[in-house]
Image (cartoon, rainbow, N blue to C red; front, side, top):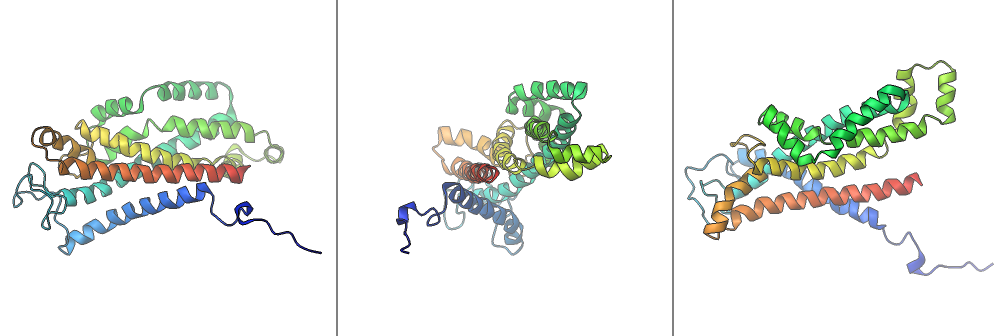
Length: 290
């Protein structure tokens, strides 16, 4: 019997799907930034990278050259060094912020969806109230209260993302808790903790990595906004938003573009990488779920 061969354009295995292409591009961008964050202190230790806090020996507002690849700032900071070390600060704060919001939001969503009743209504009202507030405004308000610093900035950012994890996990828990295997576990006398940890957790966590990635992209922009307003990290810590704020006067008066271009470009590329990875992962997870 003669076999039928499909044309190449009808063969789905010939070319990766759009979601996988987005994931690969986004993952490559993110890995490059992670490598920069890890290698920056090593390059500084062996003398290939200038310290981001040294400025007395450098001329202010020097144009990009072989001595200073990205030029220098108004105080003489090496823009190349500060841009690379800004990656380290961004990754530290973003990981802490998204991890804190995940640690708080996921358990609350599971307990709220599983127990129901007044506890569910109270938590749902609280999370909806927080969710209606603009994320940057909420982060700015909390930054005023907790002060500047890596951990304090992470706390200020994390509060805005807790309701997102809560809502996703709660809705998944409400739909999964009526399944037969949950009812069977309850009939066999399984405790609430055992049902939540052994049976529910693995079935409601699928969308959390996608949300984690997209929140990380948003957290970088929010951290940049806090730094631009002078509420993020201490002034001596290299941070993209703070460097953009310092570059405004020179950009407007003297046409010194390099102090704003490179930190802003680094922030943009990292956000695009995380967004591509998150959107590709979301499409991939949805396809696997269906």
